[in-house]
Amino acid sequence: MERSLAERLERKLGLRTAELPDGMPWLYLAAAIFTTPVFSRNVFVLPAHLQTQAFVGNAMPFMAVPAAVHAVYRFVMPGVLRRARSSGQRLLAHVIVSAVTAALMGVILWSFTALLGWRRPPLSGALATDIVMTWAFVFPAKLVLAWRDRARAIDVERIKAEYASARNELYAIQSRAHPHFLFNAINTVASLIPEDPQRAEETLLRFADVLRYILETSTSASTPLARDVAILREYLEIQRARFERLHYSIEVEAGLDGVRTPPLLLLPLVENAVLHGVAAKGSGTVSVRIRQQAESLALDVEDDGPGQGGSSRQGSGIALRDLRRRLELLYGGAATVATDGHASLTKSGHAVKLRLPLGLPLDGQLFT
Image (cartoon, rainbow, N blue to C red; front, side, top):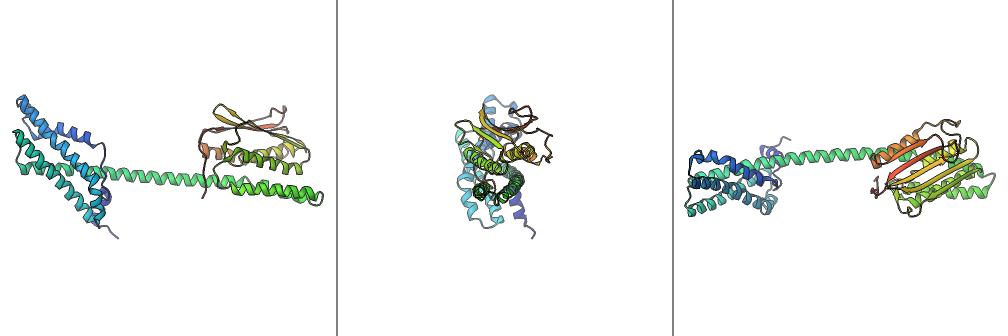
């Protein structure tokens, strides 16, 4: 349906609100100074005391009338606009309220200059000037505010769209990290059932704990480090049921248990270490070290396997690529991922080193 003229003006000028820019007094003062020669063309040839009268007399309406208009728009106009039922009524309210305010202040100022005995224009001319100048300030100011609000609304929508896109991408990355573990764990339990039912049951319980944790944290931005480390131990115990000659160590510096980190951040790295470092030769050691380095949290995952390119299992690199992208989405450029061709455990092996900034908030639900 085509909008009426009043509706179009209301939308473009932002007439639904009574807001006026806070920085306008400086504009009023500048206008008073620069328009004095326009209203008093011979001001510079007048005697000094008359020049003062001309500048002060011209400045008073420019300062007093806008001050009154701002006060009315702040304390009176919101109630007037709430009672208006249509765009036409709101437009009329702006026109009438600003004009009446300007006229009342014009009468007061005209009477004041009369008491001082200053030269002054006819009352009708003074009031007309005050009203027109008020409209010349108010409606352009409303237009500027409307443009600002529309630009702000566009920015908000853009930010919302970018956040939704990043959130969906992050959710996809987190979801992609878990299927490999689930399949491997199920296969491990299945292989143990005929050989060692007791161990199969224990492994199945561990698998249930890990699966429950994955579901609980699937929408979380962060989790306490202690919980993540506990689940990492459960995962490695599941893998040890599969690879009996697997050894592992997890070292966490004291005082870091409560630090919040993205959930299951190290699981893909540990899974890769087992797959390419341990499974390749049937035995091996996986080491996880977590400590504070200055203002960063250092998380290192190492194995003593054949090293990068030495495994018969050629990975696609998706896990590491997804990890980098996940950290980029969560921390921007503040987190880093580095890989070494060999670990500190031996001259072979492989190491992945994460550095996360401490102190950045990662609380709440990331996905809803």
